[in-house]
Length: 263
Ligand code: KIV
Ligand code: NA
Image 1 (tube, rainbow, N blue to C red):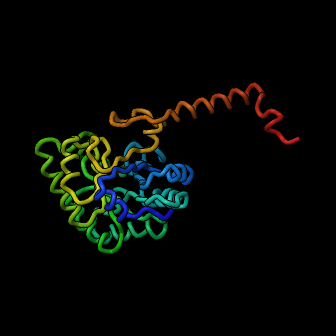
Image 2 (cartoon, rainbow, N blue to C red):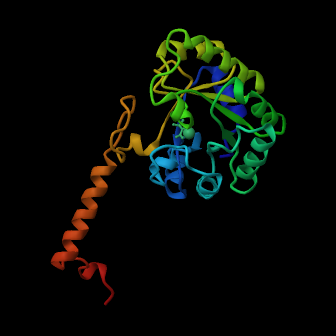
């Protein structure tokens, strides 16, 4: 199969087809998700939390995200790979956004980038899209702005009008899709009907064109995942048991047995 493109995602919206997106940060899991048919993989700056152990996405750098993106690109044959532009790598100017986004495509094999914010980054989005770099937008709870917004639902009441204006500005600037994080389900449903590009919900109800989750959250590896996360597996439990079983067998001397040794 050939790679999924942003044109395929536009066509899916026309046909009214929903699609899934997952994060990925390494080649091994990226291959599993690619073979499971996940059409879009996001190398999220959530790597700050789930890979690097920071307590927010603010500290992660381009240099830390590039190798993870390269690994995901190498691990996939079919998925569209989207790389998050980290905090501080695009806000200053369209030129800065261009310089850093280019690195994710040229050095790491990403097919698109994602950045946070609306009207305030519209010039950056226009610069990238007009230069041939597909851009995914991200509105609502934007974790890179945690120091201003905190982690809570966005776009309630009056704030809905601003979010709507930001979404329109991003579409006009050329985004191929828009993540809506932690916004009221009704607002997400309305935006999905109004906008010409696919919406990707996370904590935004089931009225969006697509859904995304951080893979370690949906697979049960993280602790204290947000309420909107559904756990599709208990990998944390499985992996913990594997480690304690291995440890016990080493201590008692039953591993390795003959079957796992060379004569
Ligand atoms: O970094 C990330 O994982 C994200 C998704 C949750 C949308 O931005
Ligand atoms: Na992100």
